[in-house]
Image (cartoon, rainbow, N blue to C red; front, side):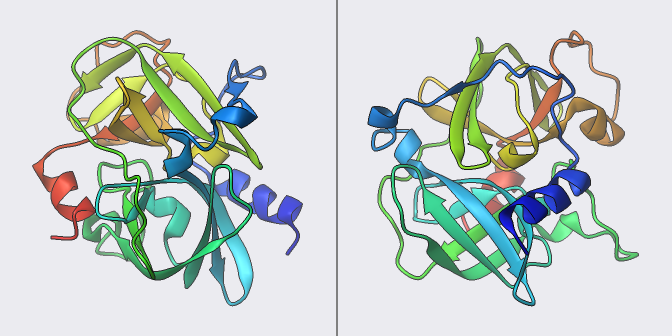
Length: 227
């Protein structure tokens, strides 16, 4: 499968395409790719039966695991990761999907609070990013558009298990870190409309907050820490 075909398949199945025609993100400057937090962000290709079935963005957490959205790695036999500023691809040795991502009937819950995956590497890497609870202010989503690492900032509003945000994203951003003050405060998983199916009550956040990230709570942290 070609890269273009792989992107097309992932785009068609993604729950979080940016709804606008002109995303306002900018490329991360080349000279910054080897600095924090960019060096800890990776492009992910997921494979099954030798074919690329999905792609997205991941990030290195403390402890050396890569974190991404479950819908990027679900049903993959292996994943390859290329970190910003490098030319090599790193292979997964273990892929763990949040157990609540699968429905009892065999379906999945894309965009839900369980849309999380962690990927173990053969050799844990340094430079993991710290996670924190969102306090206030703008956030920045940093993710991949094809082979370009791009970033955009926007307002954010915490609601239930989510951090609703206005940072522009597209299909390749699935699993990307949403940062505030240099710390990861959420994992981007979907457009707000997809996540709303899992809200217990409608959010009062304004319509400009188009996207949804999973914020960190005791349950999500337990999974991400491998407990």
